[in-house]
Image (cartoon, rainbow, N blue to C red; front, side):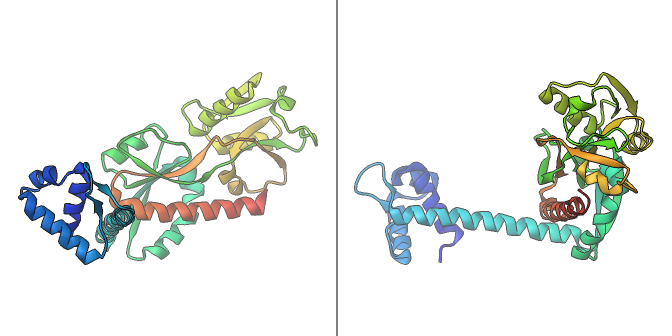
Length: 297
């Protein structure tokens, strides 16, 4: 059985491809290191290094050994992270942040599933806008954040959950069968969120990609405000697939799926000890939203 000392010997020799140099790094005499290597190879039952020429190199069996050493080290790291997470979460609490709409209409439906996995965990939910949550994570004000935009911050990590499809919501009074392109509704009023909102950013990406921009735009403060105008036959709007279930009645409208991936739901975290719970939360979100769309669209 290879212990950490023996693995360190093998890794040092492999790194420098030279026993003399490795012996200097390990602060031991070259003959002693050669004997240690011979003992390790005898224990394994095969040669790890081919020493017939310089620099030495891994044998076929040695390459396989190092592949498994790397796998074992990854597993050990994962085990330590899970143990640390378990110690952190035991009889503790988890602070989750989310965008306002998600925290009101989506997150309350998935938290019961999370508490089933972590029955001793107390949960808190805080609303954040798309411009402030990164600072909240970095300052340890929250542990996890659920968003529908990708992030670009080296201090944070993310777990991908699923692509959140975007739909054009059209009242049946102005919908025409077969007219499924944005330009078909160019004369209608588009109710859009303010520019700093995540959905609006995704919509701007859609406009840029499709080379279409509406002639008439009215700004709203929330997704539900936009939905209310559409249900009153005032115009059209865009809505996340994850949000459609939150509309009390969808029979008044048609939903046209926008081709392409413009929004992805991710669980963001800073502390690696929350990686496992972030993965579990991501899976719960994926299952909930996927099932919701199957039943509605």
